[in-house]
Each structure stands twice: as C-alpha cells, then as structure tokens.
Image (tube, rainbow, N blue to C red; front, side, top):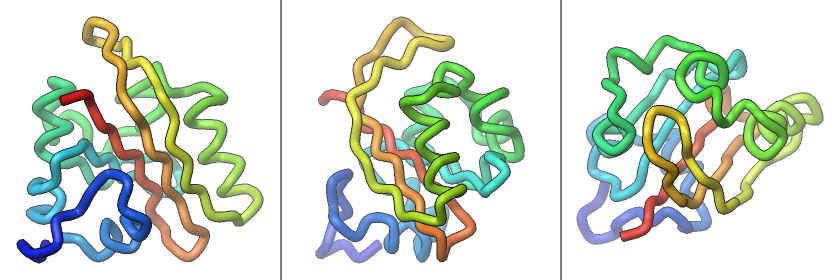
Length: 130
C-alpha cells in the first residue's frame, strides 16, 4: 500500500486494490478483510479482523466462511447476495448495517460486500465503530 494514499472502507475502487494487495497490505488496513473463493472457502484474512473477531488466521483460512467460520452471516442479507451475484454473473458492491453475534457479544458493524465476475475472489469488509 502506498503511504501517501491510504485505503478507506468506502473507497470506490477498493475491490481492485484488494485483488492486487499483498497480505502485508491487507494487514495495514484499518478495517477487517475476509476474502473467499467461489466455493466460499476463506483464502485471505487480515490481522485486524483476526484480532477483533478473536479468530486466528490459521483457524479461518482454508475453511468455508458461511458454514464454519461465520454461520451468523449465512442468510439472505449476506451469503445470499454473494450467491445471487455469482449466479447472475453480476458485480456486487453493497454496504449494509449488520450486527455480529457469533462468539462475541452483539456488535454493530458496517459490512461491504464485494464481488466481480472477472475475479475468482469475493470480499467481505468489516468496519467497526471507532
């Protein structure tokens, strides 16, 4: 990541940035990043999300996101939107208010759901209140 242009949760071209980013770039971000493939298996998970969710990178990467890591997001608000975009071959870029409840006390967050049919990876960004 270029020090003179910090990446923000609401940056318009954040998906292009994430696709090109190294793991160190992801770890430098000030929001959580979870990247998973078309089968829903987590392939990328940044340090901030690991710390705030209390789940180690080793425990998350390589596991199905919606059934093993975060079943609280296996619903029409999150998982279904990714499935619909994949099925229709359309781009997904939606931000929603959400409450995380699994393995933690309820926490209000903003989620940004990102997918592009040209990319094998889909991303879920998590922004917690400061």
